[in-house]
Length: 283
Image 1 (cartoon, rainbow, N blue to C red):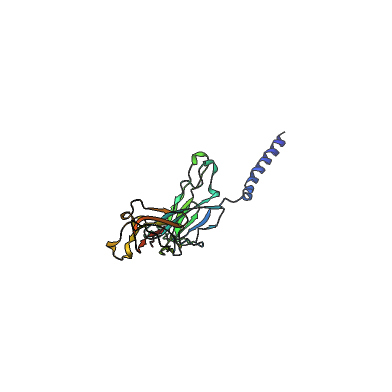
Image 2: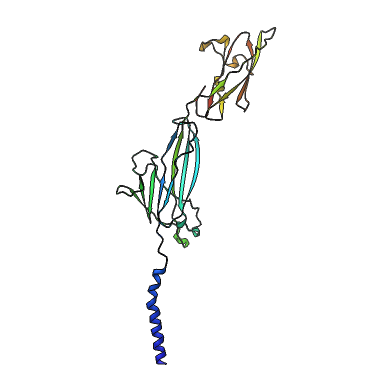
């Protein structure tokens, strides 16, 4: 019995001695290293946003699976561009997402300043976010320098039995310019008949307006004028209501407009109209 107990103790000691040899066979800890290079702003003078706009670049250096969401918001502007597209990139790492946190993968992201990485007052120059474990560096390129801004990353929702690292968000601005005026096609008009007693007549003029950039052209109604007998004098021009209080205009929704004015005197007159495209250009 004593011999059996001794052999049993030797076997247990042998098993305990062999345990450390099992650890090298375990998979190594995951290394989270990746680079995200957000693009600089873009300007276009071709009326429409170009299709070859530089986008975000993702480089996985460790055990990571990066995913990107892209959303666009278009705003018309009457200042320094026809319109602007605010293109927002949100990049998350699936390897650092914990579903137990019950959070939207893009909720509460780390918003990267558009003045980064050097914060010199010039917005939208583009920036690379270089993630090394729980630290991120804001850089001009994919090389970490001493002057790069350092951001400490921390997980959230630890109380839910897991962790979740926030995504990174950056907005690129795409400016589209257009200074080409819309075109008004002057129709060939017939001679309108006048009343035998009043010597006045009514006109109905339909004309077309188009634009090279936008699909919508609007009629500047307050600018509609009649130049009696084709006068060039600004003071001699009259608004349609001076002749006909019930005059009408209509947008036919097919690129054409119709204007009806009665009680015009006999003679040759000019109808003056002005149209505007969505970029603010007048013709």
